[in-house]
Amino acid sequence: MKFPPAILKYLKSKGINRPTPIQVQGLPVVLSGRDMIGIAFTGSGKTLAFSLPLIMFALEEEVKLPLIRGEGPIGMIVCPSRELARQTYESICAMNEFLILDGYPKLRILLCIGGISMSDQWNTLSDGIHIVVATPGRLMDMLEKRKFNLDLCKFLCLDEADRMIDMGFEDDVRNIMSYFTDQRQTLLYSATMPKKIQDFARSALVKPVIVNVGRAGAANLDVIQEVEYVKQESKIVYLLECLQKTPPPVLIFAENKNDVDDIHEYLLVKGVEAVAIHGGKSQDEREFAIRSFKGYKKDVLVASDVASKGLDFPDIQHVINYDMPKEIENYVHRIGRTGRSGKTGVATTFINMNCSEQILLDLKHLLKEAKQRVPPVLETLRDPLEEEYKELSGGCTFCGGLGHRISECPKLDAQRRQQLGIISRGGGGGERGGEY
Image (cartoon, rainbow, N blue to C red; front, top):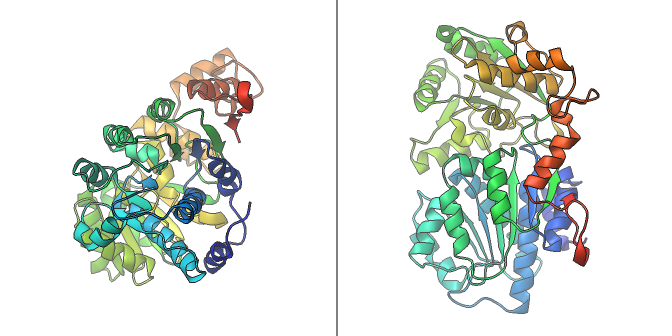
């Protein structure tokens, strides 16, 4: 597997000397043309695993038959949030610049997200486009208005698909797929695999290869997770003490917009260099906050879950969860902002009696699985199903085996694969599926 010298120069400039597990396993699958489901924790390098093959595919098509006015795109990447789409777009543009300097044809890349004026990109549109990076809502709008079509599009990547479905974009994504007129290669990347995603994958992908470099929904083992019981009225004051645990940059997550604004104002009053981001802020405000934080001009970013997935902030030392999210998957996405690319990070989470018992039980199991310290307040919680099962056998709650727990059950794993329609041992025609 050889890439152009320009790509190697780009990787070297980013300090990327060796591929991550998702890249080692995922790149050959994507380059072979197979549909793929990539399951990997956040910060695993999956963006490169799908953007690099797309660039190679677009270059190959451009060399064979250059695009003319009004044609394209050849490939699309769909992301759940504007911030993630912009980050992916900028990464592809950077690789494109290195290729142009080495004499390769220029690829025209379109960023298609809400909150920006598309008039700035009419030149790209009119000249023909190779790659579109988009959010579902704006992409549907552009397709319905016939600003471009998908007649030549043969590559579709759904990044952070679990978040996209959670945010209610499933119908939009299915509508987008209906605009394809030819056979396509579809990639689906997700950190978690709830049943909704399994059902969606079964209907949207054809005999996909599953590349799993970490159990779906598992937390990154490079993150030291510290869970502390803090009374509701004491949280905002205790926040300042927590900020002293590590040097900046630090990310603080809160469930609702009002808490984000309150924390931001409190930190500013206390002299902390902080910015905030949530869904109620304008696109300009969000971009300024991200730019300031990424550029090390601000030490702290306070965010709602809009920023908890996909965004790659370099060298985050510490993530503070001001509250527990309603779903354990969102907790995994939040703490995944630190401990990226093999580095160790710290995640501090505030809990109290306002948290639901179920989410605390989920947190307890997740901490045990990651071999982290479980605080006494969680140790005292008893899972009724677990207790009932212990009386019966003391092993796996799914198959009854004594040598493993449910998280490691081979029968459950096989059933999940069967539900996804994966063929683990090749049938006719030499096709091969299953985990790669």
